[in-house]
Length: 146
Image (cartoon, rainbow, N blue to C red):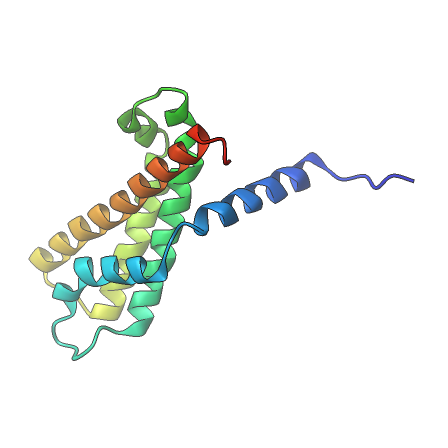
């Protein structure tokens, strides 16, 4: 007797395998360095950068990286990165908003000027990781490693 599996289960397994392969190329040190580079100026009242905030930023960076990697197939087939980025603008905005809300909560940021600059830092951070995932995913597809 054969085991019957659904198409949805097969797709999910394939997506998980691809995400695991993509995550092998990321290093935790690089993730931590980028978090500190982007967000330490907003947390100058703390003696050390809070680990909870660091972990939340890393989680969202991974999500943005995987989102870019997922959409890299369009870049592989010749579509420019800006055009591909417009395809996933809602998902990317969701990640930016989530990160901004998370950082505002943990940083007690109420000042309008400070919150606006924090939002731009969040956009730059998520956008940078999206681009990193997009380029790495495109490279893996070119090398037939997907």
